[in-house]
Image (cartoon, rainbow, N blue to C red; front, side, top):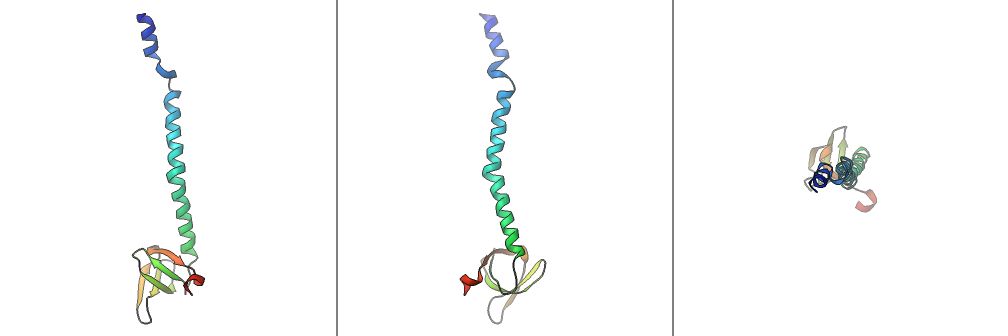
Length: 103
């Protein structure tokens, strides 16, 4: 009986594959629930930033609403009202309001 117990203790649960399968499943779940959606959002944000043009209404990450007066590769000048213009980094733009919605 002692020999049967030591044989079970030496090989419990089927070996290394029983340890690898749950680890692979956790990595797959982590990828599909966290990494893939984040990459999708980042692609959408980069597409939105690349399509900005003069006259678009936008919202910054600080919540400031304005209209693009000038735009370069990495700097955006916003017209907040008739007099005030503010300069922001292009990455500080949170979202763009479509022209049809704004009008």
